Image 1 (tube, helix red, strand yellow):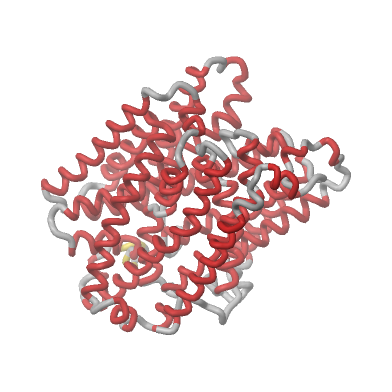
Image 2: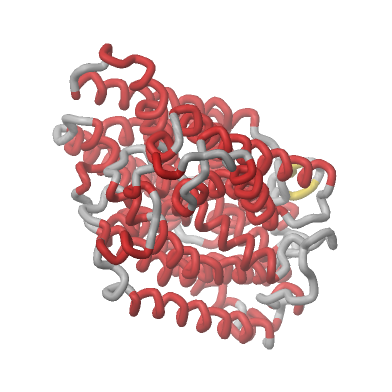
Length: 536
C-alpha cells in the first residue's frame, strides 16, 4: 500500500504530464504537427522515445519473470538482442531512404503508392488489429501491477493509468509522446538501476548472484537446439535469425516505431536514431534481465515471497514478482517513484501505440473514405484527436478480457507479433526490392504467409514461434512473386524501389559505412559478453 508521500509523488508526476501536453496542444495546427511533429524532432529525443517504448511494462514485468521463474527461461533471452544491431543496419540501408523520400505520415501509404489501395488497407488493417491486441495486454499488465502496489481495484487502476495516457496523448500528439518518453526513460533507468544494485549487493556481488543460480539460468547462449520441431523456442538460431526478421519488421514496417523515425528532420537524423538504438538497447535489456536473476536469488532466500504473489490458473503470477518486490524492499517515497517508473514504462508503450493507430486509421481509412468532407487542416486534426480517444478507450476495454495468453506477457506480445511480422515484412520487401511484384500478388503472398504461420501455431507447436518470422516472410515473397509473374515492371516509379544508385544519390553509402561497421563489431562484442555469462 502506498503512503501519502508515495501518492504525492505519483500525482505530481501525472499532473506534470497533463500540464506539458496542454502546453504543447497550442502548437498543433495540422495532422503533420500532431502525428510527425512537422518533421522537426531531434534524433536523440526520438531515439530515447523509441527505447522507452521498447522498455515497456510488458518487458519490465515479463523479462525478469522469464529469467527468474519460467521453465526454459533464464539469461538465454539476451541472445535475442544479437539480432538488433544487424536489423538496424538493414533498415538504415534498404528502408529508411525510400520512406523519407516519400514524406509519409502512415508508413502504409508507401504500399498504396507502390502497389494499390487494397494492399495498403490490408496491411494497415492487420497492423491495427495486432497492435490493438497488444495495447490491451499492455493495459492489463500495468493495471495488475498498479493494483498490487497501490491496493486499488483492477478497474480503478485501468482508469488511473489509461485515462491519463489518453489525455496527454490527445492534447500533445507525437510531441507529447516523445517528450514524455524521454522523461520517463530517465526515471525508469534510474529506478531499475537502483533496484539492480540493491539485488546484486544483497546477493554478494554480481559473480556471487550468478553463482547462486542454476547453470541453465545463467547460460546466455543455447546451441544445442534448433527450434524446428524440437520444442525449444529459445535456441540460438531461431533467436538470431528469427529475431533479425522480427526486428526488421518491427522497426521498419510497424507504424508505432516508424512514425517516430519519420518525425526526424532528415534521413540522416533517422539513421542516427537507428544507430543509437542499435548501441544502447542491449545495456537496457541486460539491466532488467539482471534484475530477473536477482529476483530468482531473492525468491530462494525468502520462501514466503512466491506464495505472496497473485494466483492465475492455480499458479503464482510471476509477471507480478517485480512490483511485489518493489513494495517489500523500497522505502517510503521510493515506492511512489517506483510506481511512477512502471507507469512511465507502460505509458511510453501505450501512448505511441494509440497515436500510431489513430494516424493509420485517419490516413489509410477515414481520409480516403471521407474525401472532400475533411477539407481543412483543423477538421483533419479534430479527426486525429477523436480517433486517439477511440483507440485509447478500446485498449482500456479490452484489458478486461485479457487472460493468461502465455507464460509471461513478454512471450505473449512477441508471439502475436511473430504471427504477422514476417508476412508484413514480405509485402514491404516485395515492393522495395523487386520490380515485378503487383498488388494482387503481394496480397496473395500475405494471405499465404499468414496462413502458414497459423498452421504452425495450431498444428506444429513444437516449431519455435521465432521461426514464424522467417517462414512467413519466405512464403509471402515466394507466393507474391509467383502471382505477379505477368507484371509490367516498367510502370513502377523508380523512386519507390531501392537500388544501389538511388542509395548513393542520397549520400549514405560512404558517410555511414563506419557506423554500420561499428554496429557489426558491437554485435560481436555482445556475443563475447554472452559467452562470458555462459562460462560462469
